[in-house]
Length: 434
Image (spheres, rainbow, N blue to C red):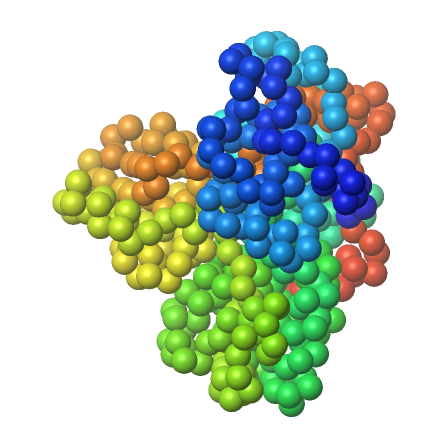
């Protein structure tokens, strides 16, 4: 995907989160007043709309890790202020009118973590796996407006018809987890393992990764997985090799390995800043699973203490969490699974049951509203949305659609043909897993 990135000079000029202070009635930053790290300033500075009131990437140290990894945030062209000043009812009416005008030429895909103000316009809702399937089978629409984050839009471009155009309303909607694994660092780790004579390694990248890493897997006999099919992908990989190199989320990789009864002493974490990833040669030779040092900021906030507190407050409560949570959180819960699994499990539960959920708050609130006959709440008492998903806003949707209606395409996400071809191999392998 070709986008503008910050220069060092631009990084030095960025200011505090929510710098466009005209959006705040009090004239203060939209983020609660608290110390802001330089790394967070880099990632949140110069936003055209207020950041979420809680930013998990900052609270979990993700921004500092990303800065250490040398990752710079994507940049979005500033759009006219009128889009943000427009009353919500007027803006929504304009979006609906443009949807009707574009008709079958347009499909809007919405990830479950999007805010309700966005998801209500989606023709299809889902997690990354479900939306990937939709992108692969979409036949009619000329344009896909992907209300998710950039790695999802990349996958839609790779899997969809080459003639179809994929648009991301706000290019700053990225994924901190995906950015924790840089292609050159993964290549270096791969070469180190090969240099040690460690053979039979199958690379597996989580869907939450850049197209370049999916391409890496495609050309090295590997595959893509999602939280929905990770266990089945492990089976696929072990049928073809003796070891798995899993990136970028160490927690999903570890939880899946535990599910497959792989001992913890046969898993190692690869830290790209350390020689041999922070391991000894013997540890690497003994390992069956190599886990990249990366994580989801939203799911890293959930803790065993939160689960214990929920059980004290609601005896008999059901605790269900996403497998991007830390291993001890998953093991302390009653159920764990993908976003779709969480939705299906809570939906199928009897009326009157109580559920503490460890995943993104927009989805939890949606389940609360949909099922008032059940007690449903988020494990984390501090309401923390996925801050990068939060950057998709109806104002950017309207701006994108108005351009489409005029025959202009903005924020198109494209993947270079060679990368797309290699990445498609890994994605097709994923889609073929039973």
